[in-house]
Image (tube, rainbow, N blue to C red; front, side, top):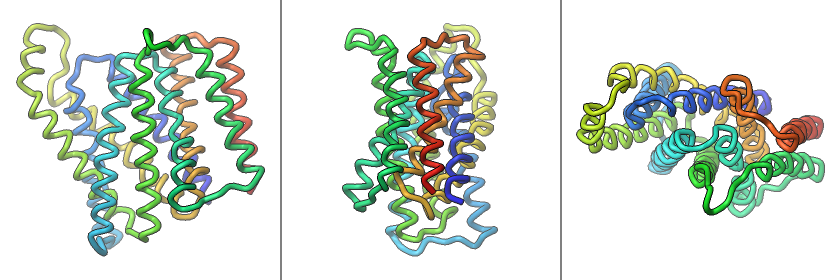
Length: 290
């Protein structure tokens, strides 16, 4: 069952990535948009807490939720920033390295190990990602926003680890998500208010900026994909191996790659096509190992 939840997380996070890329090319206030993303997550999670009678059982539960909020604040901000300055396919690939960091830290923290066939499948996936990675023209003088993609990968890895930690504490899902989205909303709201005067000045000298209400409303829509993805991935962590769940949910980059090819008309090299096929093969190997 965990693989179904992980695949659902893939779809929802892939949709979030596509919407992030699309909005990153618009003249909007990024912090206000992400405030909307997290605010709707807070509302949905709070309702879930009431409906399913979830609760916090101690400071450990609350602390993990707040840590998730900080990690999500950093990860979502970095990802949106990366899409605004870099090639969509490149940013999605680099941010997709999250499972590599998760596998390493899950071993160090909880001594989680994989079977031989699972390990093979895992490295097939990353073999595909690296084939695509090296087909891109990246250098220190031409980062193409790569630094933001890598930082986002680290922040999302921190989130996955905190999500797994919440399940080890047997924390109630919606209570954890309420803390996460509530704290994330607060951080983005503060960031928006602090930079509001500067943004208003820029909007006064430029045409085409989205209004505050339009930006916030768009954030609310994107937030539905975000909260759905979080519910799915935490549900997967409850019964699945941390590294494998992260690896499969990390395949949401394929959705963004297809979007960048079909909609944005970004061209794929032969190496990128081989990399995509290799990554899909890795997922099949993982599935057959259970």
